[in-house]
Image: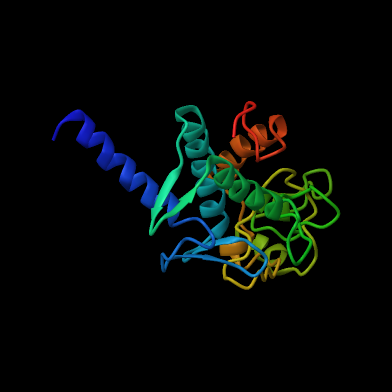
Length: 208
């Protein structure tokens, strides 16, 4: 296979994957959208898929903008770079509170956010409030408590809704939904940086 054929094969596979993520175009059984517009992929900690796939949509849209191209989705359907950015922007907006629960899934952001995240340092009292040592098993009482975490882990993004109904229990025990992770936050950082500089997803550096 020559270089041109290899690139064309890569481009077709990339387009097919991107098309599988687009609402109204995707027919992929593992990719769904909740009634509130959240991308949903079967598995735990759904927000990891939301942030990483949104980052991928954004990166691919920028490539297409510079190449003057679009995504071919078969059956005559196409998607522009601006469409990809709009999907990514919609996911960011959902995470930050534009959703049926009006809840930001970033701790400390907005008027409503998760209060009982699955995070030991956030859920245990601080040394100032509890100078005595807290053993591993002694932490169970704090884990099971219905009270909000005493320490805000500001900026942490939790797993979020884990089904296609936009439901979120805000409970430490449901770690699949309430646990913050670096692999959720890392792609989101790139998305936030981009949309902070380019708030209008219809435009990218003055193009498309």
